[in-house]
Image 1 (cartoon, rainbow, N blue to C red):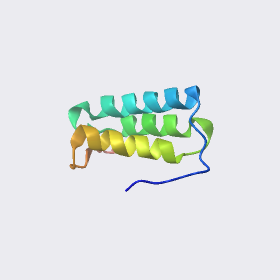
Image 2 (cartoon, rainbow, N blue to C red; image 1 turned 90 degrees about the vertical axis):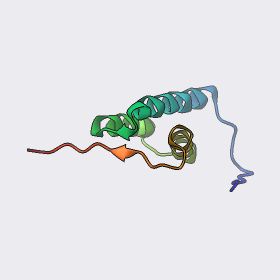
Image 3 (tube, rainbow, N blue to C red; image 1 turned 120 degrees about the vertical axis):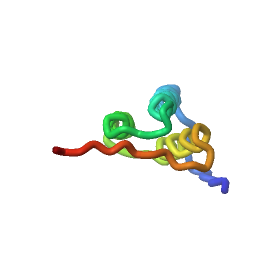
Length: 82
């Protein structure tokens, strides 16, 4: 499904660099096929670094996960609070 947003501005070089960093962190986190709580926190901190979540950030995370894992959802590594 392609989304057409005629009022959307082109991404700035800073935004492109931000998305590339996000993509790199997600790829690195998925090297073992699962997300640890620390990796999720790191990804969230990158996404929320400017105080908002954009469509482009969500799309980048989704597409990166799909490109790394295919149609398999990544596992979540859970830690006990004991």
